[in-house]
Image 1: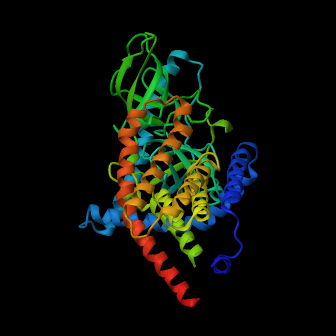
Image 2: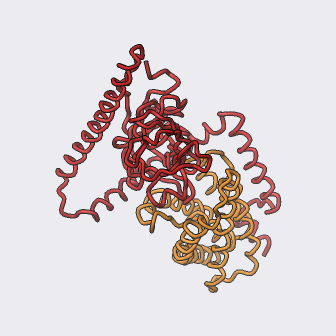
Image 3: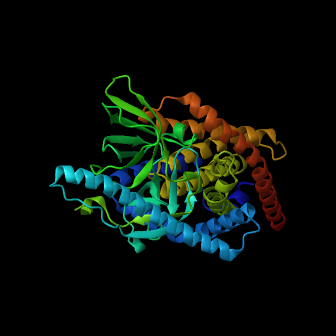
Length: 289
Length: 167
């Protein structure tokens, strides 16, 4: 009986040793992630070339099926035209945001006279979402553009007219994006109308109600109200300034009586992200004049 | 042949879970297919198989969706080993046993993820996470696991039957 087993399975490592070996490999991988870039890069490349074609195909199939189920009557031409128009609308909304912001800034500039800053038109690359986090704890997704398309870690990702997240890992033909609703995400934001700074915290508990938490807003004169717009701050070291995040949903005073916190409704519909734009300009490169 | 089935199961489940199941999820919750197959191969084929399937599954999740390589690989590896130990008491005809062990595996996975990713960042609201994330995932996983178990058992029994005829 034992001989048959050997013939069938070839050389066998005792399970106890295998457990030890694989555990050591896992821990080694963790250490290597923190110390070098080489091993993760190799893994990212191998996994990228083997899995991305399937992922893209499957995502396309499921997206297609989804669309079909949503509206059987819609003709393909109408869909494509609609998509084009939507893209245009997104662009215009963003442009409009920028203009509104410019107006507020103009007022500011007139009062300060010597400030000379203007938001540049950011270069963007379009990408398709090909997969989402297989677990339920985090809000991380994978897009179909990577290093080969000039995507780098730390680039900002937007969809529609608002901030989606930041690129946290790249492979040759894919990139990992951590969205701002992720429990592990913090974004430095700013009130569009009063220029007060605040921090936007992703929180798993808030996701279910479609909101994001914010805090550390100092608003001594009670100028900030429900419905006011929050954009990314210019003091953030990872996010480009002036990208819309959302509108204030609830606001209340913290127990310290100095700062305020609450929830905001994001501009982006995080439940239905199919196409995103990656801003190829990085904050460190000095995007703002 | 069995190795091929295992490799294909891991690949298919990983792809399905990160793409199509997100459209089929209820209230934004997806079932944990990777835990299901790690557990199934563990108690059906023994410790080594469970470990290898778990390790590869976890590593795939780490590469594409994790921030540190090896965390999920280790969690899944241990779950695969644990299910492998239960291999001795396993009979293919008993349906309660697989469901019980898949449930335990998912619970262990959920608790380990909470401990490694959330508790360390001072997220203490375990009650909320239990009610809104762990419980729905567990129920959904158990329902889906029944179908996957029956499918895998059907395939494995056919393959093994063929092997015995050859010998």
